[in-house]
Length: 268
Image 1 (tube, one colour):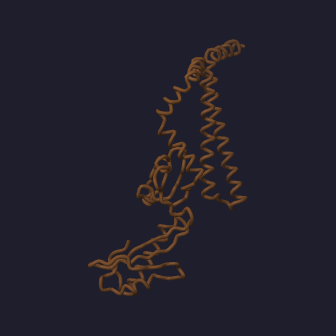
Image 2 (tube, rainbow, N blue to C red; image 1 turned 90 degrees about the vertical axis):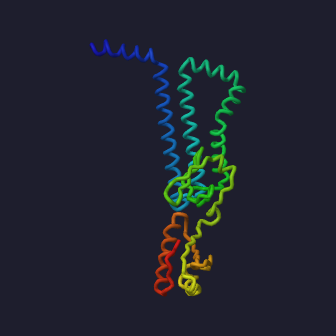
Image 3 (cartoon, rainbow, N blue to C red; image 1 turned 45 degrees about the vertical axis):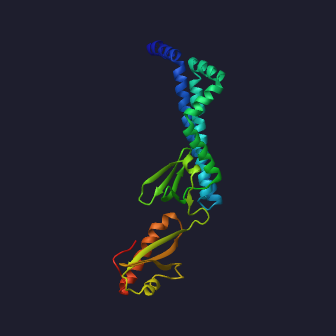
């Protein structure tokens, strides 16, 4: 009885004194929980759809747009939750009333202050709709080449060959030229080079690697006083196969050149 007589009134008094803070906290927690639930539901729905229609994997176009839609919905739920939480406070409601009364001036101020952020977000939406680049594409941006790893509302992440990531604001992508190597054909051309001595038989060196069956073609790329650079090209099934295919082609070519006594010191 003592517990009932002391603790319950105390809890009721605490709730009465901090009603606004408690309701705001609960609203924010529910908003984050709802955002997570909706995001996971969309993800599971996409997995089931891909298993049923696309054989287990969505296309690059669908993946890029799905990620953007998920993030827009997630951000929208969080923003609504925060707005409802702030609405619990009388001071915030009065401030909102004043803001709405001067919405034109506020819009100019906020728009100017958040110009870069809004520009990146709008550019991100446009990139997801028009699809000049897609997740998984091999692109060249600002003279750096890599695979598009993610496109979100503000930035695009490109995985470079050395394992580092190039983070590019979406506004810059929308305003500059981007070379997309796989937008039409998912295959990627791979090129490797070897050097042979000046007096070596270039024709034999080219025949050692060129093969129509393997889709490998070779040619003389450069002639210098110290040697002749030969170049061979073939195709990889996708950006992630480039390194493996190039390494295998280079290894095979150098081995054949050594077998025929045509090897030089350099390969690239």
